[in-house]
Length: 122
Length: 433
Picture 1 (cartoon, each protein chain N blue to C red):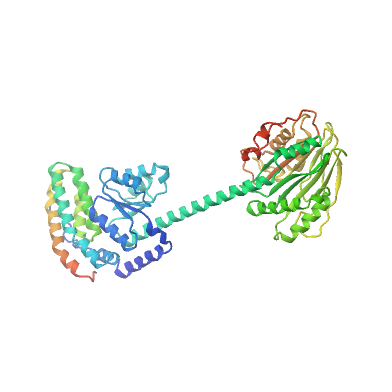
Picture 2: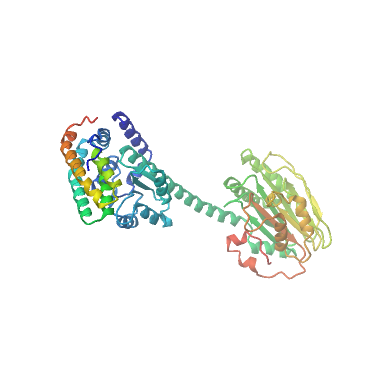
């Protein structure tokens, strides 16, 4: 299923700026660098939950991904994870959403180096 | 939010935190199953000098750490695995010792009903997701400062309570010991009973007995304006003055004049005391009074005589130096009763807000049947005034009763004597003498 959130910016640069003020560039860089692994692991765990027909676990994992993505300013990934969480009514519907989730993760990871390189933020 | 606004918020948070540096030692538990979220929260807090942080990845471990780590604040994710955040919150709150532990629930919800459920579960506050660093630091700071203030307040109250308890015991020691008062009264062929309660831990009433000779003794009853610590400290002054001038114990008017002059020199404006001094003389069958604005004593003459208020005028002690006091005599034949009281008794408001007043107390004394012990008389007049053991007294209250109805045997010991070492009991009327 194609997400309607394709026009959502990949990153919320205002949130990134808040984090940079709070953490400093070095710590922010270190934490954002961990986002790819965290998001990839979340995606794999969701696949596993869906393969096990564990709808509630898939929803919970999507909720956690939404939280971490949103807090780190990964706006589009957070929005897609939120849709995934809200649509957790059947395994089949979530399976259809997996490609969009995977794409969002890939796009986020691809854009991350630019965000990390640009300390000016907004 | 632009960067300048966020920077300003950050600075505001830091300014608040400086108000109480002890909060930086606070133990903070972060309960979140997402390691990167834990790192983010901890990273923000560490940059603001909150360094004593532990983590829990599910509800059960959060509860265990609440028990073992004893955090000062918990950041709890609503959707934590195992037990939900709300269940963790409920279980923490079930422990009476943790009812005021700050629990900040992390939630992305904006649903008003869901927010209400968080607070119903016992959340102190919430922390919105995505994490806003300034909001995080500000809420954590506010709740830790509040917790710190509450602790300080508790410590202060405990210390004050201990000190007040010590002061109360010291003040109690100013009152005449039960055996001493009974010995003096018995030597003069009389009995004596008393009731004394403060409106708070310490009070401004003081009474005592002063030996004069085998047939007579003096009784004084003082009531300093107001109550509480100031009034109580003045009772110590007064006690010292009374016992410093033993040569005046046989001279009521002279004693009052001396006390007035000494107190007028030291009391602050607005501080004064009413004071009644009575010498009870069984050999002369009379009582001799001097009063400094005190409520009128009540004398019931003989078994059949009417109870009368002995109205005596006189300036309260400490108002102005040089005041003179008049000596008055009244008959006090065998079988008579004398009742002294502070206005805490006559002015005690009953359930309807009415007060028995001096006249009501006179009627109550007059209605006492013959044969009652002094404590039984006191019980009856207290009951008539509406003063019970469970009442909160708005003013310090003292009642002293002396009688010459000694027809019944005076026991060597009894409940009152036995309870002398029990401070709270002694302050209540005893039913047996």
